[in-house]
Image (cartoon, rainbow, N blue to C red):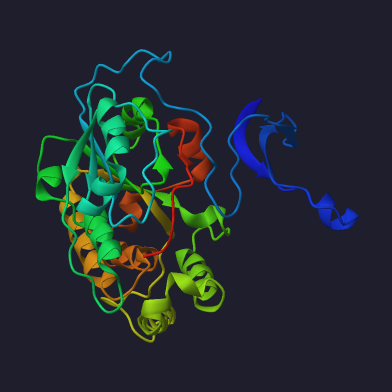
Length: 335
């Protein structure tokens, strides 16, 4: 019997009129092809809005599988700019050999979270001070600085001896001890991103996912695009025209196969298309000066540079199972 993770959302609640919280179930495929669901108890829960909450410290003293002896080197980084997030003192992953981990923080963060930053340092993280860049009339300085780190990090991170560069938001946690084994399986990919499809199934149709998210933020979650609303509307109109062929790029309609959640990014720095990925990321950052949500932008520039098919759209269940991917509640406001 083959096992896979699945989220089982009971439809009985609608019939009985009672509220049943989504629970993570283990889905078994029996010999006759039928699906069997069994509750997974303490497993991390994935719902259709958020990654699972963290429950386990990825500490230095826990029992580990034998370390991979390959020479692959990996750099990991995250950041805290402008106090957008509280610095967490728990769920900070220990850094294993073969991985270099960096925390970028500005002066505001150091003043507020200096003691906590020291805890990160004690677990093997290198602390790097970073100065905010000016914002624009559409995007605040702290937010734009975070985007610059996400898409155009310091050149020494891109031009060093690392094989993979892994970036994640400050509220995301990964088990760094499992990272090398994870990326080894993906060495033929230039880029690995989280598939947005756990929100809405749009397999093979990234444009459908884009329209779902952009429409939601224009009509319901308006705070996410409040200062760049007009630019978002123009961007949406442009992509709609390209999708139906009223406008094209090199004769191609805009038909992206996937849509991505960008809170974790794995870049294969030794891939033959690494330079093209860098170009697409630089274009994404430039557009981030006009539009607050980078998820609206990155899929287009990957498609434009013909990188969609060398980009792995990783299901969230795979990240949870293989890397202990989870989220902590650090956000204190929107910038």
